[in-house]
Length: 283
Ligand code: GUN
Image (cartoon, rainbow, N blue to C red; front, side):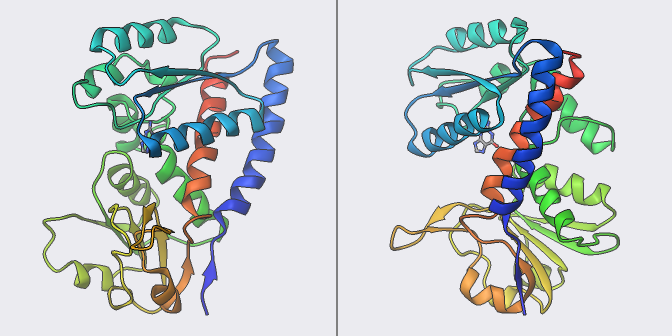
């Protein structure tokens, strides 16, 4: 019998705690915690993500500063804004919604964000510290997945974890977090030979490949924990994950749904990272 890991409920509880901490910070320091959210262009998915992030800020009492730039913005204009935000003492965190348009050199723009305001945890220093098991700002989605596993008291020590997808945003930081939790970690990708066999050996599968219902029941061993990071549309236009939920769930001990699984936790961890950045800047 499988159990569903309810990301929505966990996110709701965590946001209540964060709200209390944010209120205390605001009172003690006589200023709001601030998050700058930068969106370039009109990508519909990015617009929804950004809207949800701003809504979450309102919910927990973080002041959001929203910047919507034209899709034709120049590298110089974007960088000028990021330099300003880097200097602004009311801004504790800077989030640039990805992907940026093709004509923008994302890496060089993102490098302007100081490590202590990098609430996405994408900077070379933050990833490097995570790699060495040092305190850092941790990427929101993988960090949210770890909170979900913790909430169900799933012991990772010595377990075989297989991550499907090697993105810088999810797959790679997820591998580091699981490794830091003493799991034995395999990262699979488009060139992996015999993906099914790799997945069948897994106690924990993290699906972060970006393809609708990619992980099927024949790839999952009995009793596995399956975490679905995907957010796709199926052939009928219905929201679905990277896991074929209806067939896979019967094999699992725990599984996350889409929607209502990892998604709400990603945004919650963004709120948490912004709060931590404010605390670390000592008000
Ligand atoms: N685009 C897709 N996921 C993310 C994320 O976690 N952070 C940012 N900044 N952009 C994204």
